[in-house]
Length: 75
Image (tube, rainbow, N blue to C red; front, side, top):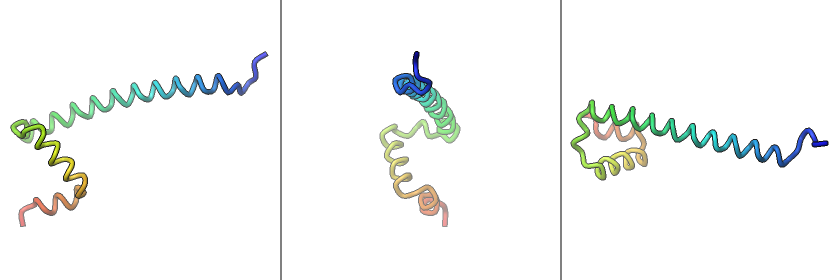
């Protein structure tokens, strides 16, 4: 007779949940990328070289969004 709290079954369930979460994360990342892509196109950023855009975003994230906005805003 199996125990109610079988650790093997619990691990199997945990792995299944982890796989489901990974799939959900991948789907949401794709949706987020699509939404951000639309924003970039609306702003005319499709003309920026992808490597330069990546560099801009990474620098902005390292500096912080508020500080980046302060630095690029007209005085």
